[in-house]
Amino acid sequence: MAVVCSKADWFVTSCSTTLVAVNLKQSREPFVFDCSKAEKKPKEADVDNKSAGEGSEEKDSDSILAFAISASGKHVALTDDHKRLVLFCTEPSWKCISTRWVVRRCTSLAFTQAEDELYVADKSGDVYSFSILEPHKAGELKLGHLSMLLDVALSPDDKYIITADRDEKIRVSFRRSPYNIQAFCLGHTEFVSSLLVPAGHPDWLLSGSGDGTVNVWHYETGRRLHSVDMRKFGLDSENTEKRFAVSRIISSPDGQHVAVQCEGFPSVQLFTVDCGTESLLKPADTLTLPLSPWDVTFDSENQLWVLLESEDMKVLLYRHSEQHWRLCDSESPELKKVTNALQTQWHLFKGSVGLESQFKHLYKVNFDNMASYLQKKQERLDLENKKRAAAANGSKPNKKSKTESGPVPQSTS
Image (cartoon, rainbow, N blue to C red; front, top):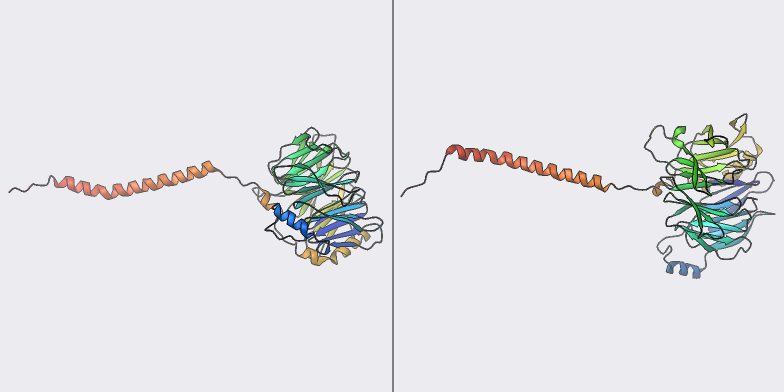
């Protein structure tokens, strides 16, 4: 699965074991980092993890599971399947600051606005904080859920940690005292797959889910302000029973636009942010694509980048002009720079084409015990009725023949 993100002047993408970063403005060589060549875990740490029951029967790989870019673009962090947490600085040139190890495999990373801490959410439901100022300091456990965490975000003032889990819950906790819960945002009927505090609206939270909806919350009170069913935009017109997840929600830096990507569909839905109506997200354009996108991101100039799941490593660039999103010329210098850099790494992306849904195993499985009981009961009754009917049909002629023949004469001596 390929993932992209853009902050400041950097366009960053990861796939398989490799992270690739391209500077959109400066004539700098792309930065490429291969996790398979990164620092290995000390043997003592392996022994400690195995004794704790972590991964004793699993084989770790070097595939990147998540990465994040700080607001200024000066720091980047990634975590991989080998449970490494690698921290980079990007100025004046890319440099690996530290390699630390997490306890469990991670699902999401988030920098504070102050860029002094990095928050890491993992599959066991825990959130750890790692210092940026002390890059070799071990992580500290901050909070935990009873279910797998799928995303983590921070409020723009760094006051709250917002976490989303597999059991439809969104929790808003105080960052400085995470045991104090400010609110829950409840309303999704499937796992919460994506969180976003949109630019320009620091009191809003946008959430996407496996139920195919995008919700807008006032997260400090847990109140839902607006809900959008993505099926209304023709995403599932052929099969209304098909389940799909909202895989990405992003907002433009100017806070005027929101883009939503749903997994498995060759389109991206654009919304205009409108605070003056009940429909806070007003549908704008639907970008119909030749293939399903791997991921989408906005850059610092409010341009929308789309990375397609294609064998020719196709990247599309859209600009907002005259109230519509229009496809940019393929000769755009920025687009050519990114495309050329990614095509040289095509061997990394090739293995991710056509992979199964990353959300497939997160859906709830419902067991209707009463329906199963009634079905089996009916099957037993039908079988008993058939047996009775067969027995009645087989014995009736015999009884009749005995009756018609009269009493059996007794012999006399």
